[in-house]
Length: 146
Image 1: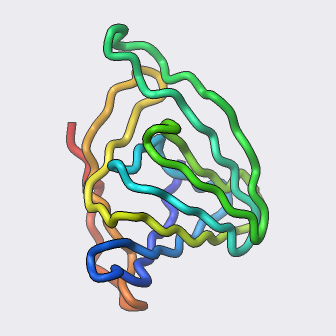
Image 2: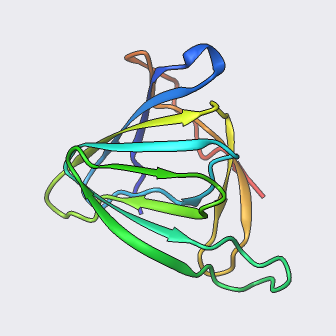
């Protein structure tokens, strides 16, 4: 799945992050957590699909992640998730339309975990941005480690 762009709008003096995500056709996130932060998502344009997953079982390694539900959000609809609710993946499943969403993370964080749906394996990921305050940032390859 292709990557979307993450654009930092405000760092909230280190207390929160405000980010605009731009989703091309068929683009989506990995399955991820939110580093114990609260995540508010508002669709600014288009339509996004959220699929939630249960946390991987510590007692059953190599087990696929189980979806617990999915929902579509259209322009001006809002969603909330935190780690006690579970993990999620967000996708623009359209093959003809782009989408944009506003995300607020409280508190701000710079690391999270990404998960493999087939195995439940996790890896730490450095949070990166395509732009900060409207200025393009240097390109960085994947910032995830095992």
